[in-house]
Amino acid sequence: MQSILKSQSAVAESETLNFNALPNFCTTALHKGQSRKFRIKEGEVLLQSISHYLAHIELFEYSLKQDANIQFLIKEDSFIMYVVQHKNACFLCYRPAGEYYEIVPCGVHKILVITFKPNWLMYKAKKLTTIKPLINYYNQSDSRYVNLPCVGISESIFNLLIKMDDKTNDLDDEIYAFINGCINKYYKRLIAGNNTHIYYQKKADAIAEFVKKNFATELVDNLSDLAARFMMSERNFTRLAKMAFGIPLHAQIIKIRMYYGVNYLLTTNKPIHEIAELVGYRDPHYFSSAFKKCFGVSPKFLVNV
Image 1 (tube, rainbow, N blue to C red):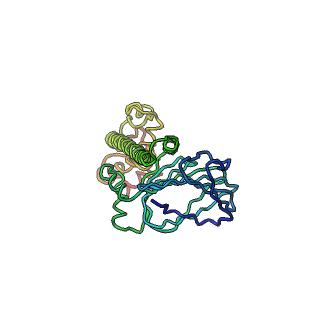
Image 2 (cartoon, rainbow, N blue to C red):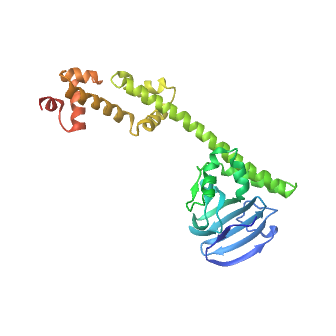
C-alpha cells in the first residue's frame, strides 16, 4: 500500500538516508523502513516509512527552530490514525481527499501516521462498534472529515512500533500484529472512557435527583456531608453537580428555591415567612434578599401587586 500523504511544505533540500546516517534528533530509528530527510525554512524533518498491503506507516520526526505549518495532500479518501507525541494524543479519523494542515511547535517532536486499507478497517469495525461512524462516512462518500475521540496512549503506540521493528520475524506478520495492536489499544481505551462517562453520568443523575427532592432541607446545605453521602471527594462532587445542572450546585439550589418561592407567592395566601421555610430558608430575611437578587423585586412587593 502506497502513502496517500504528500507534504506541501516549501522544501529547500531533501535526501534519502540509510539507517546508519540518520540525524542526531532521530529518537526512533526504524531498521526496516525507508528514510528521507527534508530541510524546510523552520528546520529539518525526517520521514521514515514502511509499506504493507494493509497499511502504510509513516513516522515524522521534526527538529524545528520555530513553529511550522505543515500542509499535507491526502490523495484519496482514507482511514488514518494520528499519534502525536507532544500532545500525548492518539485518534482515529476519516479524511476525504484534500489538503490539510498540521501546526508543529518548535523543538524536537514526532508524529506517527498510519493509513489503513479501507477494507481491512471495515472488517475490524464489524466487531469494534465504536469505530463504525467512520465506516458510515466512507460508505456515503461524505465530503466531511470526522475524528473519533482522542485518547492519551501515544507512548503505548510508539512502544508497539519499536517492538515491531526490533523483531526479526516475517515483516508482514509483524506489521499485521502492530496495526492490529494499535486498533485494539485504541478501542479498549475508548470503551474504558465510555464506561467511565456512563458511571459519572449515573452519579450526576443521582445527585440531581437528590437535590430536587431535598432542596428545601438542610441536607443540601453542607458540601462535605453531600460528598460523603455519595462517597466521593468534595472536588468530584462539585464537578458532577455542575455536570448534572450545568451551573454550580449553590446556584442551582437557589434557582430551585426561587422557582418554588415565586410559585407559592403567586398561587397561595401563605405568609412570606412560611413560604421562606417551605423552600429552605429558616430566616425569612435571607429568603427576601435572595428573592430580590433573583427577580429584582422583594417578595412583599409581589404579594402587594
